[in-house]
Length: 236
Image 1: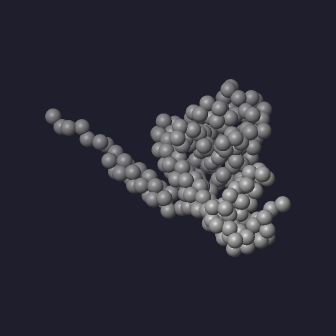
Image 2: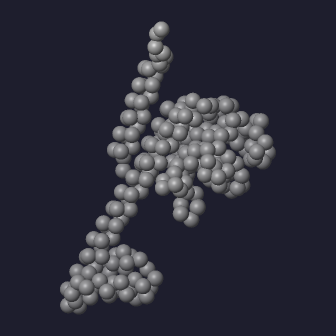
Image 3: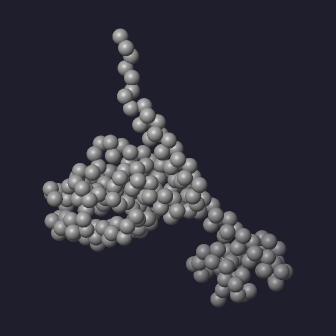
């Protein structure tokens, strides 16, 4: 009796190779914006959808369009945010994947919203949360001008892309935070040097002066240090 053989080994290897290249490409770019730009460009080619975008969700839950392959993506984001209606809003609130199979037959969201989406030439969409540390930090949106564009196979690929994107965004954010911390440390060090030279202070005393000004004026230590460097005077 012959053993079962995978009928699509070449396709599986090709898919693995494609996502392998994606992982390398995402590792090579720097910054959150560059990372998500690479994600949306890959999404359009890998999933053969018409448009893609990434909406960043800040800690205050305020959304920000971070990347798009077409201006109408930003318009669709704004449409749903302003109306507080649509699959994007549902995905954000429920932290779950939301698929719009066909705008012509949907009954979940308002008719007014559906009419405007249809007028934009969109028939189907998928919104996938990008999670970091169990918290949704962004939404990957995929749009198509044909109905039922995101079936089981397409969503399986989209889920893999979402996982890659989540890791890449987390790494980019960590690198950005580290770079900001290093920059702030350098600024504070320069400001301390100015105080030490001008007022004959030791390092501990110079740092205490900066810290006190920061607290009294409710300003970040980094900003106080930057102003001292720029003006050679302590903030009023």
